[in-house]
Length: 311
Image (cartoon, rainbow, N blue to C red; front, side):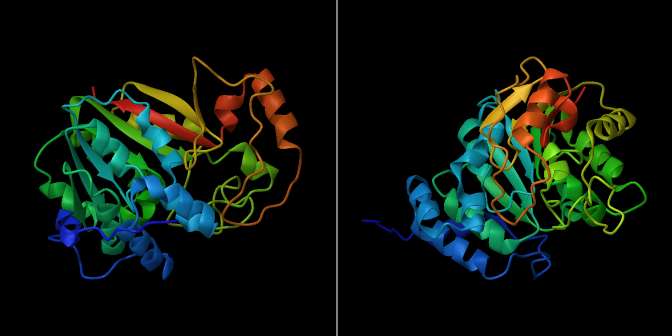
């Protein structure tokens, strides 16, 4: 029998609304009310049961503990201070709060920030600044040991604006990073094999939009590895390390590195597509085997996780 407990409204005190414009600039609609109710009435240990019962992609995506795998393996020190840009409903916030001394979250949405505050109410070492990153970053009081952008960097064109929004985004973040600090970026690979194989582009829901260079859309862009590396170098970063979340950064079961790449036969979770339909153009298992055999996995990994050094 499922037991629900109503969490204290004191969780809402984690929200700093100084920079909030009064309305959420993006929303998934009524499903966020449902997510908020779940966060208020269920403990972290109960969320997997809720996911199994609802069979809803939004509930799975926002509440699955698998989301935390993207950062939980990192050696984040207990005295570290972390800036989480685009914290959303708090899928990653709890993992960061469990490791670090202090987590400062930034998110545009008050509703999603409320979900975050209630979900992670057991932690007392995080706060959420609600508002636009461009307004908030000028007022941030210090540099950080870690800055995370998990599924956020691709929105630079929409939220930063200007002629070179992604480069400007990186330059701002570099200024907020301690010389010894790390910038963590998780993003889809524009040339991820699943998009060639028939999955729709994540943000626009169309086939081959990213592979073709986004000819019909604007506001959100993902990149191939060489494009990312060129931006990193142009913005003054001297060192970075690529990792490869599999099957992607959203629900990563394994994270590979250049020191330990997958071998033929390792990649067999290639057909799950939870949030929308897809077509099947070819056998991804067989093609991934060839990709691994030819040493091409870093070019065709579905997602990237990048650690950039501040110095």
